[in-house]
Picture (cartoon, rainbow, N blue to C red):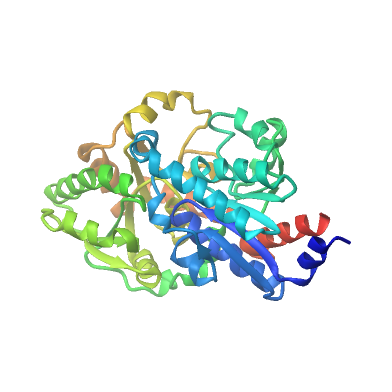
Length: 390
């Protein structure tokens, strides 16, 4: 045994973990907690993450907010800074001398980091938590990942077969961690019916999403009110965008009540009758909370021009899980106040549209609620299994 190997055997397990946005921060924090529990707590983390990962003991190389951007135009505007932070992340990981590197979602940032780390530490195990959407967009990425990713931890049940078909790395389905948030949700049946009914307003967790969607959402609420629809708009805001959102909605003709924090968010979900939501993980959260929804999203011009290349029937996670377009989505086209207010209006009442969504919500729950260990625990076990095999 070499001195280096002996040193590794005597020290705590060292895990580098890189996230690129707030949703990845949440997923990474759950994985870190599960790794700590399964390893007996003798573990040290370092890398890039936000407040949730830092609360689990992460030493972050820099604030997560500096790299949490989405879309090619937004990325191009901040490209020099993103490249610099990417190289800093690589240097940080290499200096940390970890036993494994875990990259969490955000492939435009985390995968270049993983490629560079692999060149400098060729024997370091690399795990990708949340597969890129190779089954929908740029499928050649799957095969390319084999050069720098040893194991993919998938959150959708169809992804392992997709990686086999596309000659990607080993891929293991662990389940979607959003189901773990069920424990945070108040009992919907015990929540009193809100009068007027609550319309959840969910413009996303990224600056670019909020910039594009808030004006459309403002006009949609006004259009609903002009139709004579009575409702209370409630907007759960992520912490790093709360002040900005408060400023932006201050002059809205129908001003939403802003809530912050997980407890207030889930309390609002328990009372929500209908939701107007950005595309993303929140659509799974709404389905698990039993809230019918309309999904609206504005793309940057370049992505919108290329969306015909997508190979999937939907970009809404709740639709992808059940393989049907049960929840209406207006991705750029139709993302306007007239269309969205018309789609939302019937969901307030006991209508065929609402009943159809409630049936689809039952299907989402059946597809995502897996018995046994939680997704974070299964993901942690897959990480430790890979390390044990080395």
